[in-house]
Structures are given as C-alpha cells and as structure tokens.
Image 1: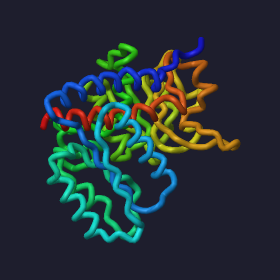
Image 2 (image 1 turned 90 degrees about the vertical axis):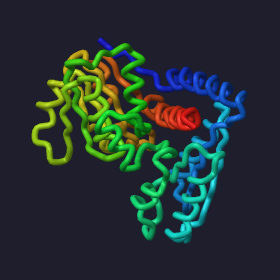
Image 3 (image 1 turned 60 degrees about the vertical axis):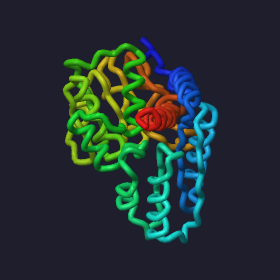
Length: 281
C-alpha cells in the first residue's frame, strides 16, 4: 500500500483563491488588506522567504510593504519602526522576519507588535488565546497542518497524535490545535526515551524538529497520517523533510511531501491571517 499524498500546493491554490475573493470584497468597501514585512540584515534564506511572502500577497490582491534594513539597525530603531506600523491604518498585519541580528532581542520586538496585527501568531497574547481557546492568530505552520488534515476529512476526535518537536513556532501550538480537535496528544522531544514506542501508537504523527530521518518506516503504524514540517538538505543537496519519505510512504495512509507539502501552506495561512486582520478591522 502506498500512502495518499496531501498536496500542499493544490490546497494552497484553493485557499488563496478564497483569500483573493474575500480581499476583492473588502476592496469594494474601500479596505485594502495590507501586510508589512520587515527584513533586517542579509540572511539569504530570509530574503527568499520574504520575496515569496510579498509575491503571494500581491498575487492574492493584498497590499504588501517590504521594509529592508541593514544588519547594523539598532534595536531602538526597529522598535520605533514597529510602533509606527502599529499606528498605520493601511497596515493590518506586521511580520518581522526571523532570525534577527544578535544585538536585537527578537522576543522584545515580537512583543512590540500589536496583537491585532500579529499575523505570525508569535505574540504572547496570541499564544495565550490559543491556549485558552479564544479567537486570535494561530501560528502559520501548524495552522497549515490543521488545514491539511481538514482537507482529507480526517476526524481527530479520540485519535492519538504524536508531535515530534516542542518549539514555540510549531511543536507547542501544534499540540494545542490538535487538543482543540479532541485528539489525545503526546509531545516528544530531545529528552524523550524510546520515541519509536510512542510513534507506533500514533494515528497522526507531526515531525517538526529540523533533522533528517527522525521518522522512519519501522516507526509508523500502518495507515497513519504523517505530516512532515522539516526542511533539510540531503547528501545531494536536495530539499528533504524530517521523514524518510520513500520508506514511510509504503506504510502510512497519508503523507505530506517535501517540498510541496507544508511549505506552501505556511505562506497561505499568513495571507489568511492578514485577510482576517483586515476583516476584523
């Protein structure tokens, strides 16, 4: 049995078409959803991400502003810029691309963003809203994973979900979102003993550690859903995830590929969050 592929590119197209439709409705009322992307320094990976985010906005009828600053920008100058964007009525979402240069406290910068414009979902207020089940912005990557599960009509109620990774950006919010859908959730990490014993019990596995082959075929229950959040390079320099795709796809029921799985969904959910910020006004 070969697993069904959950195609993040196809699902993204559907969701982006909906964003474009809703954005057009807002524009007809004189509101243009606006996203400000702030890039500090010359990190090549960040430059690619930022370019993709800006292009996705424009393609979906959203207004985007890209602000680039040299790595020498001071923390005070960046905080002042964030404050100005908080007060700008044309901007509904603010995204400060991470990582920031070492002399800038990323936590302080994220906390300076108004929770009403925190479309990355990284603010403590957003994390708190997710924790207690109140409306707020969900972090884009785990939010995209939930949309992928929804797209295959998967009912999480009573299912055992194992999340490998406990980052504030993916692992922890992922666990909370799965809990909201009534899954029984186990969070595994570098201190977990006998990971395989836990993943073999899982109906759903989300791998989000940034390490190749964290999940291999002998660790997966037949028919399980496997979501691969990882972004790594193999020995040939090709993009690969945290999951041994070729092996696992022969055991799993559903699997996301890398590339073309979770990646496109992350940017799509950023557009969804920005649009919702504009709709909330």
